[in-house]
Amino acid sequence: METQETLRRERTRILERTVVSSYRQIDFKDISNILPLKRGGYGEIHCAEWSRLRVVLKRALPDHSEGLEQFDQELEILKRVHDYDFIVPFYGVTTDPRSNVRCMVMKYCSNENLCSFLEKHHDQLTWLEWYRLSIEITKGLEFLHKSGFHHRDLHSGNILLDDKRTAMLCDFGLSRSSSRDHTTEVAATVGVASFLAPERFPAQRPVYTESCDIYSLGVIFWHISSGRIPFASRLREPMLLRELMDGLREEIVPGTPREFRDLIGKCWDIKPSRRLKIDVIIAIL
Image (cartoon, rainbow, N blue to C red; front, side):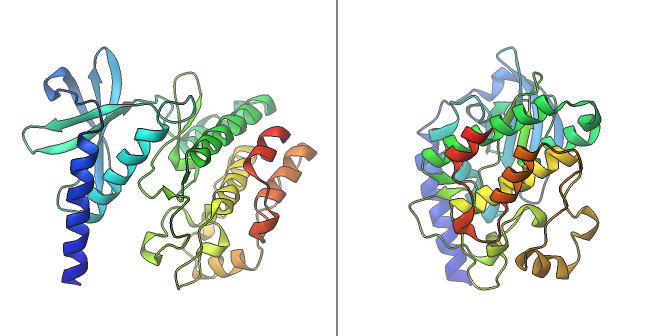
């Protein structure tokens, strides 16, 4: 166990040296009005102002090696994918001199994440707006895939909306190169369970391929159409995972256009090989 932790820390240090030299370094003195926004298991998010922009500072807690590793992994991916309309804009890295902790500087999105947005505004949205959100999310995922990465933690909480209600993918700490080993340790299988492809649930090294992201995309489409988190009342039930593996899905909302209903079904098909390819989804939308 100690050897694994030592290797993890060394890998983190190597990534840190590589990453820091690859990005614009933002002087912490140029950042003002820093306010706490959110704290998670591995990190903290603050809102602030920089260069007349409202921004978000995302930092990993220094005493969490796994969080630091995910932080550096996300930085490495943002190097390749941040310059795209439907990926959250990334401006650079700054270091808080008081704690010597590095922070990502990213765009602040006033409409929070898709989950919160749908909870507040779903009843006011038209089908045209639902289609637009679906297209933007799909194009963001297509760009990520074409850049050589799988998201691996795609759900409505990891999609942000700015003041124009443009949808943008974020949170790439669990993302990996599509050219690497397609399996993932159970400890890395995190996220909202009802958004995860069923093939990720087996106890021994669950499979991860591009089709897992497609499954998650289909569940997001259902969330957009219904305004509800899938199986929200059952997320803590152990049997839910088994039932999802056996093919359980949410009921399509009455009144959903046929094309959108069929699209959802073809994205969350129980067989990964039958799920649609990303370019086909865009063509349908």
